[in-house]
Image 1 (cartoon, rainbow, N blue to C red):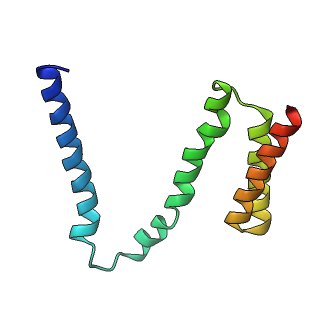
Image 2: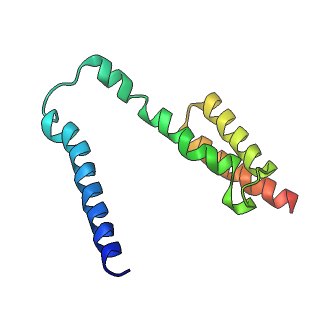
Length: 110
């Protein structure tokens, strides 16, 4: 990179850094020492439940390992993980069961 490209890159990096700081400061610096209303706390409890499917769904439906094509092994592991998670209500057991199912199906399919 030379000339203006370098300048634009650094302006973008600094602007994104300032924006990220301000977003975090709005929660931690301004209202960090105050009690949040009950309705806000209720909504914040569902943050992980909303974020995790958004992170996991693309890896199941369009896995990079298969060139973006869904395959039986990942779909089976997802079903096992979901089933064990619902039945046992134990996150670690669900993750380990899904991991075992993925490798067993991959081994079984060759």
